[in-house]
Amino acid sequence: MGKKDRNTPRMAFASLRDMPGTRVMFWVVDDCPYCGERHLHIAGNLRMADPGESLGEYPAPCDPSRVYELALPPRPKRKQSKEARRKARRDGKDEVLDDDKW
Image (cartoon, rainbow, N blue to C red):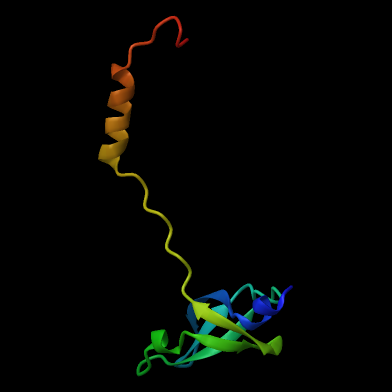
């Protein structure tokens, strides 16, 4: 690991969860980029706070000298629409199979 890697914060994908029976929300990092363990970071009150404001750089609880950046996980890619699947099927039917293509 070089010097540059030690100083740049790594990305840690977090999900927002609330503590049952209270109004407290937490950002939960399931896989820490440094140790692989689960860490919690307070996001604020359930009714009054905007949890998006608490995203950003935090010291890692496993090693406070290292910093990671809390971020939302990337969204999955959208599936192909039904119409696009139908069009692909129709295009495949129009194709004539020769002896060479068998």
